[in-house]
Image 1 (tube, rainbow, N blue to C red):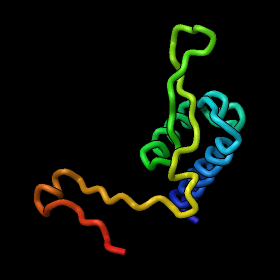
Image 2 (cartoon, rainbow, N blue to C red; image 1 turned 90 degrees about the horizontal axis):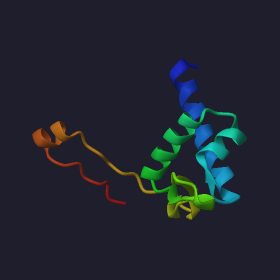
Image 3 (cartoon, helix red, strand yellow; image 1 turned 180 degrees about the horizontal axis):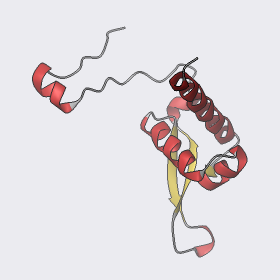
Image 4 (cartoon, rainbow, N blue to C red; image 1 turned 120 degrees about the horizontal axis):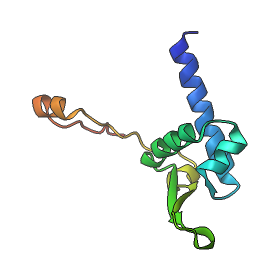
Length: 107
């Protein structure tokens, strides 16, 4: 097994661990970091990517009148569905300028 495949497996495992924790209810990135034993910056990065896929979503709140708002994360709509989220085909802007936009595969 190469180092890259080990890293991909670890990242996939972390994503699944985050989603499993969020099934219990909304949580902050710091709370997830403490529970999973991973740096909060890593958790925030994974949450941002999971948010792009619609698997998680966040809301800003100010508990007990604190000055700064914090994000509370919860499962997104596509994480609750029985079927996997549809693949999004993205094409580099320069490639799209040369060859046209990407086309979705028909089912």
